[in-house]
Image (spheres, rainbow, N blue to C red):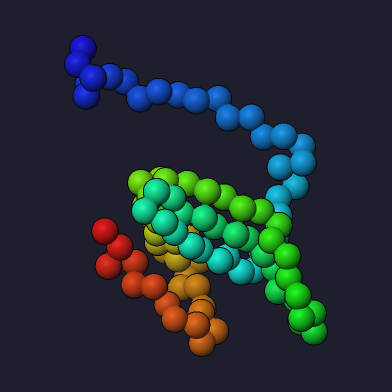
Length: 99
């Protein structure tokens, strides 16, 4: 069997108790270099002038693009089931333009 014909690999992913609680974020700050994308997740609260980063995720450009496609696919499926997600005056992303 050639490399391209190999069966997909199954990975057992463990979710720790702390990670299972999750972290709420309503703001993601994204920066990039030629080698990586950095995602800082924070939350902005009314009448609080400061915010701190609660999680930082660093990934390669290829993995960032895979994340973009996975998010786009999931948003499309979500909106088919639950209706369009309102953007409250924010700029909407045209999921048809993601490539």
